[in-house]
Image 1 (tube, rainbow, N blue to C red):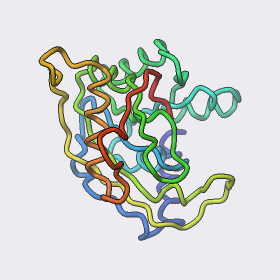
Image 2 (image 1 turned 135 degrees about the horizontal axis):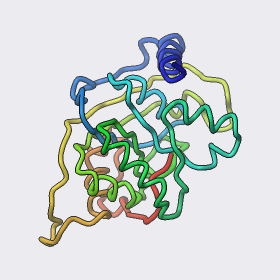
Image 3 (image 1 turned 120 degrees about the vertical axis):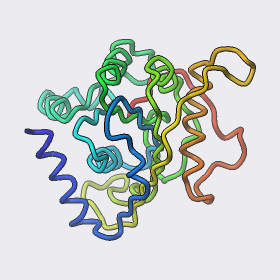
Length: 224
């Protein structure tokens, strides 16, 4: 019930605050059943909620940084809304097991491979290998989602939402290849890079990094 109310409330607020300035393209590409790993770029505080509530399924789960769960009341609220903690900058085995359990049960998992949000709307440039580990181990289809503009809805240092142009662009579902470019089994680092490249391809050209060297792979968990 709490999750249903949360979804409805966020959708209503989005339409009231953003109205026609929020555009969603390609959501019909989202699989309606079965396990789905949704990956995206993280450019705003409101972005995970906005993305999740407009996915046409009610079994969307979120990885979230463990710091958000330190307050017991907030932690309870996050859990009631299908979020679970992962410790950033570590190989959080408990968080990864939970993520794999969500996908094994046939649900949707929303992950941001960059591991944290960007305050200026640009890509951070480092992708966490943990996202690739989840994709490889689960075997779930991956759906890339690119977003931009949400960083202006609640800018850094502000708590009040503002009207801004926000766009979500959903790509085609795909499966990771079994082998890497060297002919060996695909590594978690390679998987993370492939997923993020699919996200980058959905962004407007002015928001894409210049040169392949802009994308590096880290080793920590992919928490927002």
